[in-house]
Image (cartoon, rainbow, N blue to C red; front, side, top):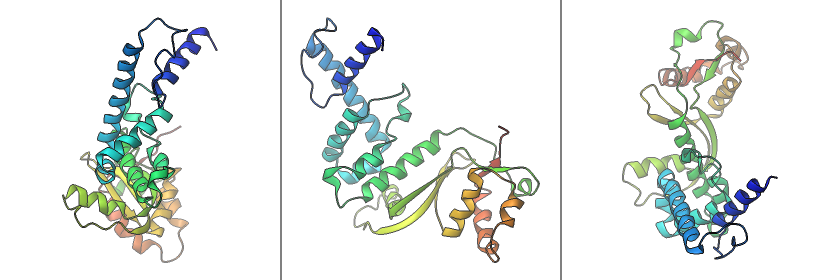
Length: 246
């Protein structure tokens, strides 16, 4: 590692350390500790605001003070790896799942996972959606770039709907294992749909792209009729695109 890289690494370690140590870099750079502490505070407060805005519902249900402590813990162990702050927070759901103070509240990590997926869908690349008649040929079909499948163990999608409807009061979080499909429609609205087992299995075929006819031919007898409603809803909502050549 070069001298410059070593210096940068030490400065970052100091800035992201859980506890600031005045004078910890005196042997490396000529800077007054209080100036470095101001920079460190700005960094922490800035990233805390990013997390709070991105995980708005998680912050609300966890409580402002609790979320602030969680955010500081996350920031100290997850330095910002990119200048694009839209990419910051990818590991928060896993961090929450391991957090000591949240034992018995695993649904909070499910909620953060949902919010992160919806954030990614909002910022994903665009692509021209296919109409149903465009899916009937030999073209390989893929999912829209914004599409994601996540597994959750609680009714966090209903929780998010209650939040946006200003109806959190009295909402009961309950165990509910489900596969959620999140994507952005042609009107730039981020959608979420809970999938049946058959729908989730069907959608997984498109993660590697294939002609629709080839995928339908692999389905067991009687599987198509229930999927017709799924296609009737999701095709107009822009879930499928033509796969791009590699």
